[in-house]
Image 1 (spheres, helix red, strand yellow):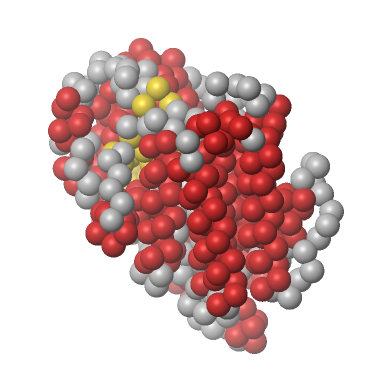
Image 2 (cartoon, chains in turn orange, brown):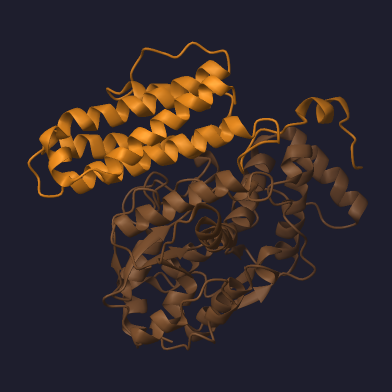
Length: 157
Length: 307
């Protein structure tokens, strides 16, 4: 991961940590705005992944959310990236809960959970970028040595 | 209860003979307590875990095809794999053999060379331990057998990322009511609720635990696990229920490491769902291998009248 990208991830995680630790009153004072900010932070993370892979982050939306479109774009050609698909959907789900019912008694808790979900996204993608040189991060990954095996079809037999 | 899966072939996989031994023990004891017959595959081989596919995916397909071939030769049409990695690989092999001529060609060649019958897609169905209990016994059947209610136990059910992914290799999932969901799996929730546990809403139930990089990049794995643990606690959970030996071991080991390296202590307990169900059926903590877990939860369970 480049130093600039590391700073970006560190900043995102620091902001998420601050939101998780914030008192209820702070969260409730601007709940819908904070919910939107959490989704935007998720988009920032996904854009960093796409930029690291020389892709132009899409401006399109899926089901009304750019976050989901960015995730789909990131997963194209990289099956392991789908390990964060449900994480993104959970983030959108919690954002919707907060925005639809900002006065709900669970709103502060929902915002904290959304921040924890966003933190998982940041850690997962940050981890993938960090270990790019070590090998594939994830379990249903694309083969690293696809070219070699393609060139030698009779590797074992 | 459908009455299906009363007798199935059992593929424990390598992890259940090592770090996941408690899962092996509790799965077998649970089956015994429920009157279900597990017959271990004879001379089974490693499924290739997460490593072989990075080198030669078709060889990985063959490794699972050989195990499916053994199940077929033993007269079974269903093989049960409790490990998410094994389950995923068997399902993927089934899919690849049905849809990829190259995989069929390699499987045929290697099977011939190894001197066993070539497995053909469609002969054996792979199920997870969750499918096994859900379909063989069901929630009502389980409820009727509960001796030690899990009442008061708040559980975050953690399925990990391999149980539902990629979606296309699980054609039986997402089939509407009664089927498992890939977006929000619920079979473990359903079974533990039948034993009176209180399932908490856990938004990271299919999130990555960093298991594949626990050795090559431990810090990333520790941070991912710590987030899983703290989120479970924020959801009010006393226990994280698991159904994969890799996830389970990762959660336990990195819980310790998070405290040592990051100074972050969490107290949520980590138990296999088979251990929890076994204790609900009246089996002792020892019988379901709680003493074989890396983390300590015996005192916690005793205080709740379990084990």
